[in-house]
Length: 483
Image (cartoon, rainbow, N blue to C red):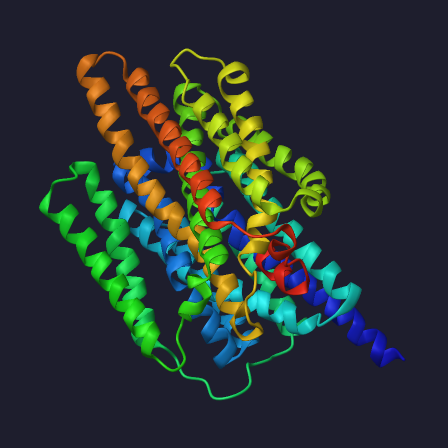
């Protein structure tokens, strides 16, 4: 009996360790947002380099997630978890002591790469640790809740550390999380591997990673002009490499991403909408942090708190939307969610240099939160609709990758639009820098709103079928919710 009790307790301790991992991976996507203005000043970053501090993490994370999942399955999930945790900690220290903008960007890219090992390994370990019944549902609920609060924790913690310590602690704080994760992993996590013959799709991994990297870099070069040779060249190279990836995946025996996963109409639509959500959320929140601190003059802590209403509204709405979903089905929410979010973003685009947070920013965040809540609940489940059990891991990784890659591309495009608008405004009135910044931020929010409108169109076109056919809610779909 004591042995059974000990094993039972060990599983729940393992859940705590794995949930901590997910918290770290998610919060590191936002914790530096509040710190960026100070980091930019200290390291002398240009506006283009500044956005790469965020893009490097999201791009490496999204591009390598599929490979990270395969490595975890084939090499050993606990082993991958431990290596990922060690590497993430080392990259965080490197970033915390960075003496130049390039060092900080490289560190963020390394963080994203090791996060791509950590995240799928933690999810797989959770899946094999809690295999069925009420305990499994509870475990996934805890894991998903922690992931859902990670972005808010990152904004708040980033504000606290930047204001009362130093922006570098937004990276160095990970050392404490990593130490707890390593000790907990050694004590409570059990090794597991996927059965059968395992072969790595290295050709697919290389082409998709280089293709996405070239595509995102091409968009960042658009800051200097869309007709520039290097802009067109990198964009074209990215498209060619991604086309080669598709050809490889269609022919290789054990593909990194089975094409049947993305060619399903509803699933494919869900991934496209995930990319739209990522572009609006990652790109929009970065420039919101700049507006709050640079234009409105908020301290880092106040800016962190001021960013929270959207997350609070999302968490408040999700339980009600979850109950409503079986009644009306996901399609109405998938269309209404982006439309509501677009209204919130258009509201934010009305900011002025001398504006007030409570009239120009807060209402927009509340409306945006309502829209996003309507999206988050159904889109996570639709990403796994009709997927075969052997493809569940690839489908889950694809959903998370789509969000991160969408965020990388969105932020690159938004930065190009911001730079062009801010520069034009500065030429009109060189004596009003805040007006130039605000004009640029306004264009970013308006562009994000247009992206959300496109998301509503995608939902209307792709998310079709009877309500019962679009309700694949069960244990398998819970895996996607954590991303």
